[in-house]
Image (cartoon, rainbow, N blue to C red; front, top):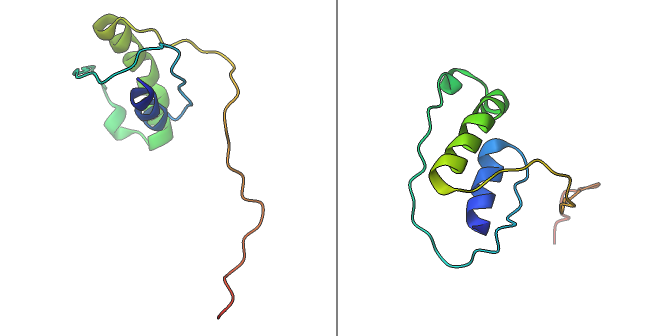
Length: 86
């Protein structure tokens, strides 16, 4: 489920945290109708797909996506330099 949460995070453009406590591997096919998401930019498509994917996950897998505030790890690079020649 942690891998599935990671995939959802990347595709939905929001952090998805696994709170299922489910372990092991699962094999499933998730189907939904993306309507006109192909015609949208990535961020707009992700926002348009969120309700569709949420409904599909609920109906087909019995899982619920809930919006909540949780702490997330963020990598911040505040400075970068070109490497010096050795």
